[in-house]
Length: 315
Ligand code: MTE
Image 1: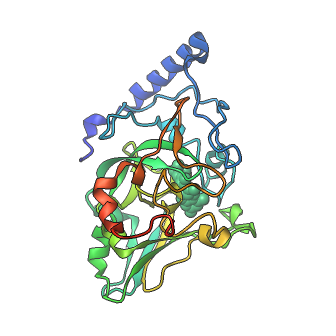
Image 2: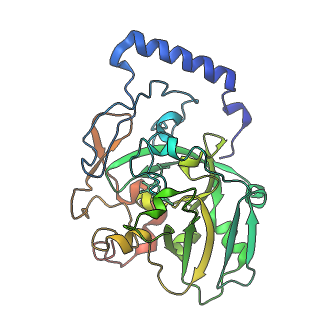
Image 3: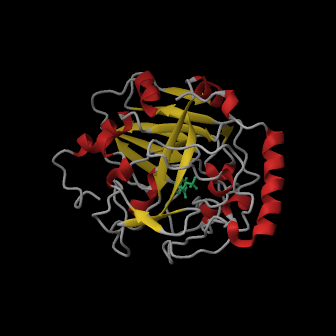
């Protein structure tokens, strides 16, 4: 689906709507619940308010299941971005001065046409609106209207060689800007990977923004990956390198906790995390839990990638 400019609320309308919502929140007390804080420790049970009374700031949209998108304010004030802070509600503030322009993404490795793409080049790909569910391994989820395009478009341009079996992605390494990278708990930079057939699936998205706006730093400015059928940690932010390789890449999370985080990380209610159930999730902004769907609901589009594979052994 293309983004039509008519679908984007003008800033003035948006601001007056915000003022209205603020007043309504004061008048209505708890009617406007904030996005809820969830930490890996409490795994989705906590309902702490984050002061997000301006929750509706963009037009309500729906995904293909008719689910309303998560408000912009919630998506951008509740983030996992360990380079800045492990506290989800502190990331937006700590990342606010992140310099994401100019930016380059190096695409290389086992390809015939290696290239360096500037953001201008990346924005030349036809940008689509893609409303996808994001399911974090911690047990919370959102519905996000991303802007971007299929990763396959970049891969087809660079022409992977036949020896290329996997795609490896890397986030910027810059501890001065990203103080979390001083932490010795993790092997920086953040790395993720996909098998090449997964990377060629149309759902694997290179995202450049959300709700029709370019990314704020906390969401992974200026360009990130979105893999909606996998747990959110596969959706690596602020990418500077895409490399075609023969060996399965070791992601930051595989290196940090191999028993807990595997390479495939397909959303699967039947395979629990060693420390919690994956059978249900809490949609940010909602109170009750909902059932988690296999492949996050994208079974029809991606199940064939895993025909004959033991999904429990290959978590
Ligand atoms: N990418 C980088 N570079 N660093 C991170 O800490 N966190 C991941 C993923 N991408 C992360 C990252 C996790 S655990 C999730 S759930 C999603 O980003 C969260 O994306 P969001 O903050 O836009 O909701």
